[in-house]
Length: 227
Image (cartoon, rainbow, N blue to C red):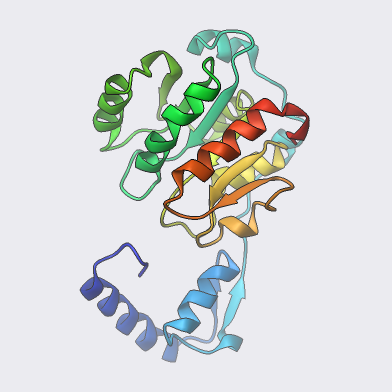
């Protein structure tokens, strides 16, 4: 259940979760925000919940170096700042939000490249929007890549954005943080538990595309803040 789901589906989910919680000795969540949301919906009691953040191998990310060979393969010119997003091209994953901020970012930083890592049902729609906005040169669609390869793409990103409207704990932001990449996300679910607003990136109000653009541009134009 979440704010962007239909009311009747939310009702069914909440009823089912309340019932399940009665028979549960422990409920594990991937972010503190998820237990707060569940408790607010009357699901279980506070002592039932434990937060276990998603784990991954941090070692390859801690001293991540730019993969120049991959940059050449993707056609990213030297000196072009890169804004990256790693997520399925799917509903609620934040691509429509990105497309509203992208023209503002590109106007302020004309040489910017948006590196999209992922694939899904919205691919054709997003590519049409990119074309209609005249931003074809600014966007690079890498498609679906193996999880073990994601770090190579993160190495090329100067800023990582994740504008999903529904997320437990955004894994791509956690990986970016481990690689000392500044992030921009929304004040939803577990995102504020990954981004320290004003220190490791910026947390923006959902729907405020100007704030997202301003945050990204600020990080691109002030690289000394990065990392």
